[in-house]
Length: 323
Image (cartoon, rainbow, N blue to C red; front, side, top):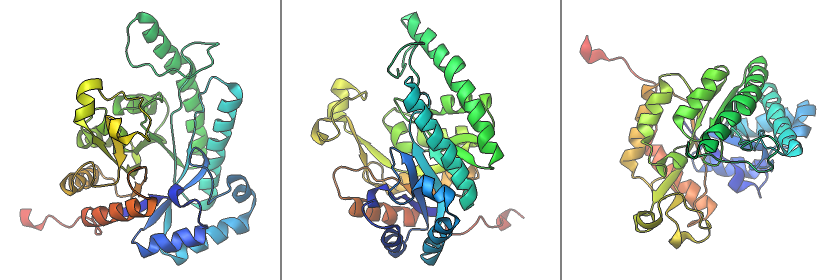
């Protein structure tokens, strides 16, 4: 397995400087933003699509520092009820898939998106309960009339380019937990799978190793984010975990995204890595730093430190003791 980094926190630096730094701290792979919320500080998607020399230069810089690209990232909402916003997100995603093909990258990470609750609505609607019954009707509309038709077509586009689409299960998106992830995969094709980010699962109360096993049974994990979360029970016991408190008011939140090791201990991360190996995942663990209690560099370096002791550097050996 490789230790990777989503390079967004280093967006103020050139790709040359960011690659040199990541090489120096022991990183093996990079996930590069090419649109949507991750932005495109290191990769101008439209320019790289048109300019073969730019693509070659990017790959050369990364190769010089022993780095590979684990995925291109474009997180946005292609199911948005505003047609212009949906079209922009769809274009970003389709172009990211094309660019991944041109760069020899096998994965694009993204969100499922979130539709409105009914035709004519203007705001995405996250449905979290089936009652009153209009909520169940809204959820059926979102899946049957919006998400499945869109993602069926997008999955064909991805298959044409031989690129996997790794969806991050994210609350306030239609796919936010493993059973929804599998529902979308089964309704489309095997190009659709998970960008397994445990941080959003922790605070929902989902057992992440069980979730890995569940998705792994269907070969549905295409990429992994290494990102931790800490649930603060002094707050969650009072107001639960559906917390709308600002992320900048850390002391008042029920949970926070944390650097690896600050939400769950090293033993947990070793168990997570081991479970990924059990289900056949040998790709990157891409660190996504969103810990507001520390700087980007310190958070990344502490995460690398923990993962360096957790990941396996070799392939599985022969089970010689059973012979």
